[in-house]
Image (cartoon, rainbow, N blue to C red; front, side):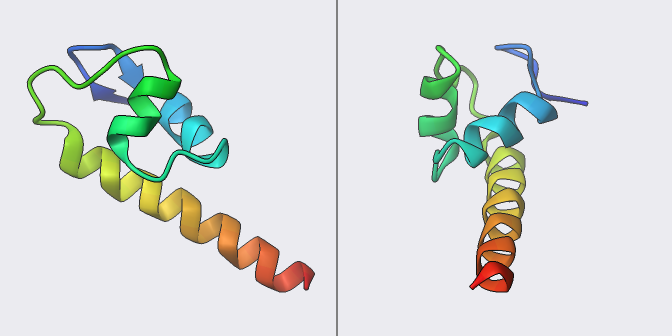
Length: 64
């Protein structure tokens, strides 16, 4: 699924940036070599990043 039409960023790439440590959409986009253009994707991108980071924290907690 496309998250950002302006930069053609799909959900999988955004989740990968979150797993690589990006805490917010702007840093995730920078990790992907671009920056937000119109900004309409930022709320949805933030939800995806939050989900991915919560998932990682859950995995870390189970491993401990």
